[in-house]
Image (cartoon, rainbow, N blue to C red; front, side, top):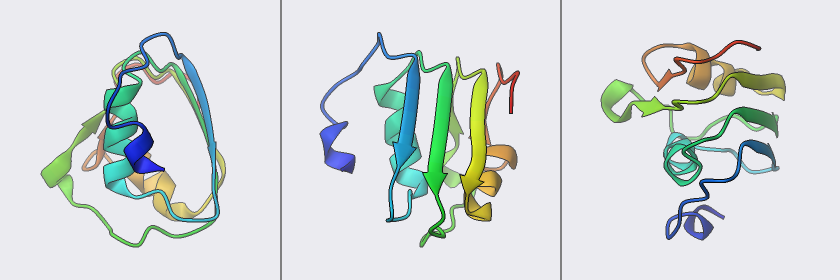
Length: 95
């Protein structure tokens, strides 16, 4: 799934819903942030814990994201997005 996004940028996509039974790792979110640079809304559904806990070495920024839905996720994804050591969300309005 990750390799599908590595070759392109989807600049017209502003809303994305992601659901899976395999964990979304930190590197995958980095690819999402680069492949969808104007993403404004992100919804996640995933109860699987992340396998690789990431430090701040690979900081991710979602520059335009203003709505984030983490109501149906494992606590790892809440940490991924809300701890300022992993992800930066400068335009977040709705959580």
